[in-house]
Every structure is written in C-alpha cells, then in structure tokens.
Amino acid sequence: MLSEAVQRCRGCDLYRNATQAVFGDLEAGSAVRHPRVDLMLIGEQPGDSEDREGHPFVGPAGKLLDKCLEEAGIDRRRVYVTNAVKHFKWEPRGKRRIHKKPSLREMHACRPWLDAELETVGPKVIVCLGATAAQALLGSGFKVTQAHGKVQRVAGSPPVVATWHPSAILRAPTDEERHSQMRALVEDLRAAAKTAGTAGKVSRRKSGLK
Image (cartoon, rainbow, N blue to C red; front, side, top):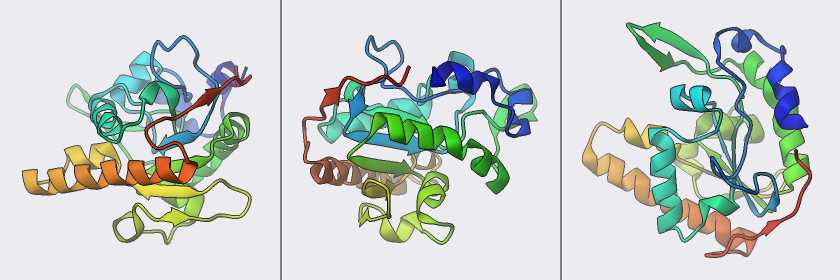
C-alpha cells in the first residue's frame, strides 16, 4: 500500500526529524479513506499537528479549510486532501516546532509520491493551496496573488486551480486582509467545484489506493 510504503521513504533527510510521513486522505477517521474523487486539494507539507496525528490538515489551518469548504458547499469527507511534501520540516523555537519551507530538492524528492496519488485518485480538478503546491505543478514563476481562482491547463494533468493556503490566511496581519483572503478561498473552491461539474455535490468512487 502506498500509504505504508511512504513511511519507508528516504528520498531526502526530512524523515530524520519527523514523527512520520503524512499521506493524503479524505478526513481523519473517515471510514472510506481512498476512493476516486472529483477534487484533490494539495497543500505544502504537514504541520506540527499533522506530523503527530498522521493526517493532513487537522491543525488550525485544517479547521479553517473545513469552514471554507463548508461555505463553498463542498463536503470535505468527499475531497482528497494531501501535501506536496510528506514529512514535516521544522526548526526549534523554544519548546515549539516552527514550520520551515521545504527546499526545491525536497519537493522533487517527494514528487513521485504525489504523482502516485494523482494517478490513483484520478481527480477531475486539482486545487493547489498556496504557492509551494502551485509552483510544484505550474512552475516556479506562478503567482497565486495574480492568478488565484483561474483554471490552469497543464499537459497530462487535470485542470488546476490555485488559491490561498489556509495557514497564510491565519497569518494575515489584519482582520480585513484575513476576511478578504478567506472570501477569495471560498470563491476559488466554488470555481474548482464548478469546473469539476460537481458544484455543491462532490462525488466519490471506489478506488484501490490502499
């Protein structure tokens, strides 16, 4: 199973300081974890909560994502959520483990795992949450601030919609910016669902990702 094989990955050194690799799934505790889906959401990497619990987007950013998906009329339990990098990269700050952006080499080392997820899940539309995920699929020159919500066409790939990462919204310096980015994320999610032809109803189909 891919979700077990990734635990043995030694493609880069991130595994040395991580609790575990965090593969994609629907929702922590979901009974059906790996069906084929219409929307696949890709973030940057697991955070502290995700590294400890073994599921993507279960920390503060995940709670905000849940809220935005709900406002967009999308059931998270029917959306495959993952990250471009599978191990938590961090640096110590007192007793806390603080997120550190993965390098290009680390992103390249993890790309086969992401490709395997894409092939097996077979989403109709990919949603990239934040610049790291977007640039992994759309090139280093892609700017989320300039092209979020727009459908991007990539040869050999489903349509891609890039948008704000929930953690970036949580770090916004003012309430006004935070609310503006959150509204944009909700609208971008709605655009992705519309592109998939499943606005308000994201379907699931049986798959063998495990």
